[in-house]
Image (cartoon, rainbow, N blue to C red; front, top):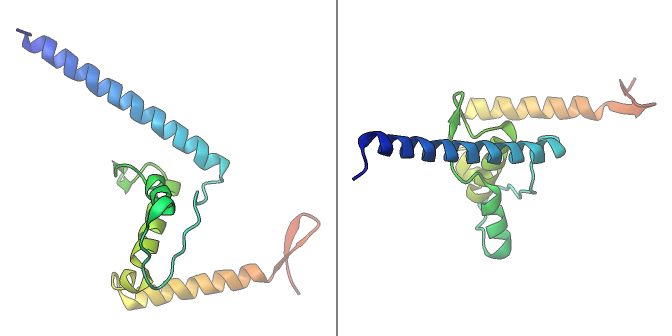
Amino acid sequence: MKSMAQKNCNEESRMLRELSETIEDLKSYQDVSRLNGGALQMEWDIGRAGRQWTGKDGLAKLDRLPGRLELLDGKLCASEAERSELLAGLLENLGLDVVVQFGRIDDWQQAIAARAIAEQEQSTLTHAGGVLVRDQ
């Protein structure tokens, strides 16, 4: 019969191994994210209607999403890139018509207006000699 101290020691060893594996997983994910500039790792087709994920493409998309959700410093997932991948996958799978049911219409309209302004400002910038300058 194992003593209580041996059981506790075995449990602590198991937890340390799991923590070590999680840290290694996070390091490898962060390395991939850094290589890609933190941008989304996969192309997503986000439209008004949701899309079913089937076949090889569906499995690839499912594999790309975080395997388990964790809460770190009050946020889901380990990084902004991981949160973005998760959100993009949900948006594609649900479709925008379902997504806009969440939140207030005014907030959606303000967010869309802010994006339109930012894109308009970005389109007035031109590249001149390695420096972005605003068109006159």
